[in-house]
Length: 208
Image 1 (cartoon, rainbow, N blue to C red):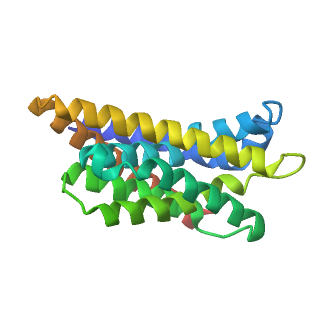
Image 2: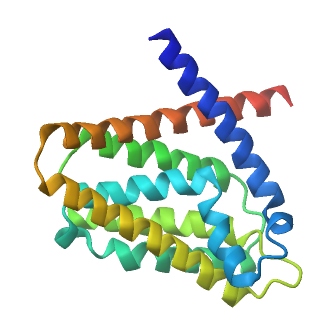
């Protein structure tokens, strides 16, 4: 058990380092990739975006593809709206921690395996889509064309969420007990990593 806790803590330390590095340096890392691919790569290489998107897709798949197919367009659309908001209202504080907290919320709901109402999943997709889109849009600067970058970002979020929804829904329809358990365990890990990142980031702020 101690070894497992140590492993989770080490993973979280690595993820928080990657999180802050990606947020600070994304505009430099993808400078030569082209605007569309810069938008495509940014959310896929930032743990604070990837973990919640995977959890949202798995949560929608867990609640049924037909009931939650709106997530496939609602989340990318909200991300695009959030990125546009970042162009108009830059430097909104607390977005990074809010996005990490979204991993805790979505991971916890996934681990609990509650059958959620469709409207609640829609609200989660819209709210977290806005905040994650804002964080991605905040790195747009210099010669980057905002519309092209946002198109790449929205496409990346659609692909990641769509594949996760489809895979989770398909696997759960096979009905082996261990698959449902594995999905819930994955949710608990996402929530645990999110909590550790939050606690470590708060400690870093207190020590700075």
